[in-house]
Image (cartoon, rainbow, N blue to C red; front, top):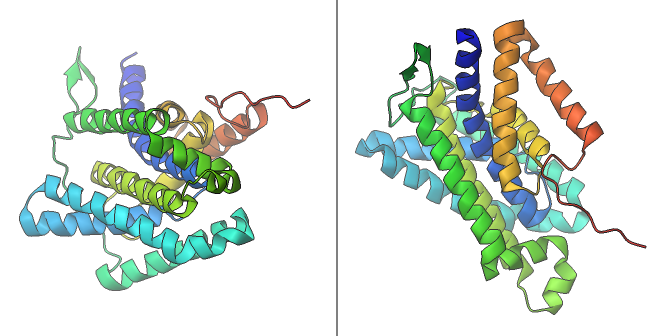
Amino acid sequence: MERFWFLTFDGLAAGAVYAAFALALVLIWRAARVVNFAQGAMAVATVYVGYAVVSATGSYWLGLAAAILSGLALGALVERVLMRFAGPGGPLNQVIVALGLVLVIQAVLGMVFGNDYRPAPAPFDTDALTIGGVAALSPYDLWVLGAALTVVALLALLFTRTPVGLRMRAAAFAPEVSRLLGVSVGRMLTLGWALAAGVGALAGMLVVPTGLGLHSHAMDLVFVVAFTAAVVGGLDSPVGAVVGGLLVGLILSYVTGYLGPDTTPLAVLVLLLSVLLVRPGGLFSAARARHV
């Protein structure tokens, strides 16, 4: 039982990290109806900015703010310069552009910063607290979980309780009708990309101190697992992203602990295929209206 509880707490800690990054994928899907495969590379670029500020000032919180602000700017720039011109050709064009952007960002980061692993200190203690003789969550894990829950609450308020959020959803689902109603679809898409990149920057600053280290490919595997978490929870649900992230973290922790780390990629694939076959919209997908 001690091993089970240890794997459970470890899975929750990892799941909080995946949930934070899955939120960024859900946000861009809700705003633009596209999966941004460059989200991981963009997050790494903003984390480099954040830790450059940390090195210069000695303050993690200033670095966190710098990373989020640079993420907002990078997201808006990508939408204005690249995705806006790829959009008219359909979602596949945007996916291809995003994949190309991954290669460009990783190549530039490698040339500028090199490919060496850089330490990324955490703002809180990463040693797990002991409860009843079992290692539980660390103070840093609690910070990550709290940050993820705060972001999902703010996103829920944005999309359901504010005029801007409703315009963003309308622009994504029915752009032509939205234009007729006076909604600036272009501005809403830019805002959606900016917010998604900002959340991705926050997720990157949460993920990298967990042991990944800072390098140009730091988010590659995290993106795959976070994408699985977003699909499991439902790409249109911020709550689903958090639940999906925690669920994926628990499953991977149990699989790794009982079957070995070599089975982890297979477990991710099996989970993704199972959800797509049984409930393609995700566990928290909304019911669709029936057309007669």
